[in-house]
Length: 121
Image (cartoon, rainbow, N blue to C red; front, side):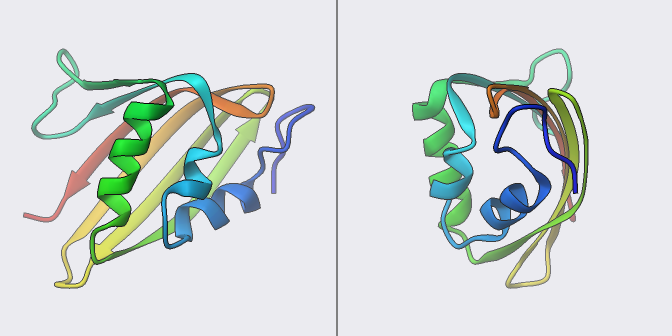
């Protein structure tokens, strides 16, 4: 288990937030001015989806956690104010999603996140 220097952000906190039933705990890990960039089949690297601030991030998390699916933190590596983690999700019908994230932390909160994700088709 890693801990960012001088912060409350650690692997177990991230695990509880990701594997919970709502996005509220996960949202609490983001700074007010956080930015998320999402790259996937529909949002390619030159034109990623970009979310700015906790309000837009909350909308994404509310949508994700309203779906009939499970979320699992597979692994997390932390070094200073950087973290990388793998998440696997599964819908009730068996469709799987894998996501890799790289985050930057400030005062124990996520300020920048790049998510690369892929789904079963």
